[in-house]
Image (cartoon, rainbow, N blue to C red; front, side, top):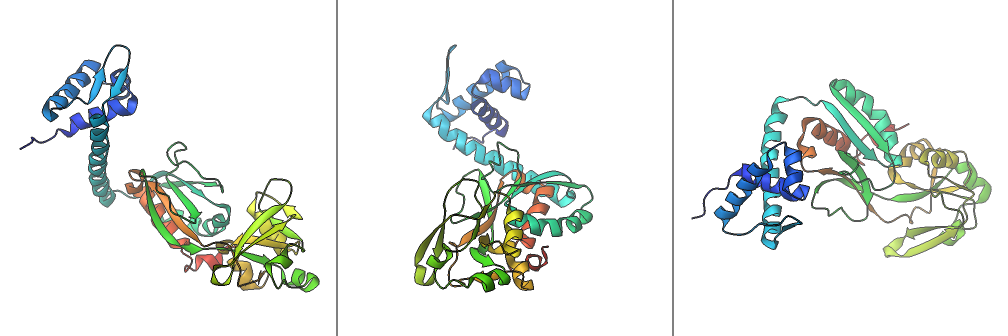
Length: 308
């Protein structure tokens, strides 16, 4: 039977591969290069395979070494998860948690974050409001709120589905009284519009209607901006028809400041979800933020109606 693997040796091997060589791993781990080399040689002897090709000019991981590296990472992640589970039971949420969210969702967070922080006095939260796709690892973001037609499939990310949402056409009742209510998607293009784009020229909205029918509205926006709050307020003030995410305009719809246009037509359904890295997702502070976001961003939550 094969002997038990030394997790320390697997950790050293993973560090060598991740850092691209023995010297770099030595510096990263603050361990003698000779010691790391001996332990990797011992691991190779135990496994009976060559994991890395050594030479004075280059460092190369063998094909079997790549396979071992992937399994080593998974094993070490599980060990970290066990440690994090134990610490989570003993530690309160604390430290800095960085969150990325799209502009529409930021209104809900603005209404709910103060009470959440009051409950966790040792926790700090930094919110990055952006509609672009944030790279969690490169930008050191702990949790990202995303709305996508398909889920992220990156093996390094975990996904928590919150719900489903879609964009809708909205305008102020006064605007619709003055300009008339469109009967078809084609009618929309002939009216003033408000669009979330920073590019000059015509914009395109793809609408999905009854039985999955699609219609493309090509229009020249009267007002366009990358900042969501400008678009939302412009729609409320009667500048034109806007195409906004459902979760961003529920409150003015309930209050009658906005009216849905062509209710049978809207954007493609998007999956509202959270993504986070496997290790970060198990820390007490990050776990508390994930639970908070999942609760307040749920389309069934009262927070959707309370956002100012």
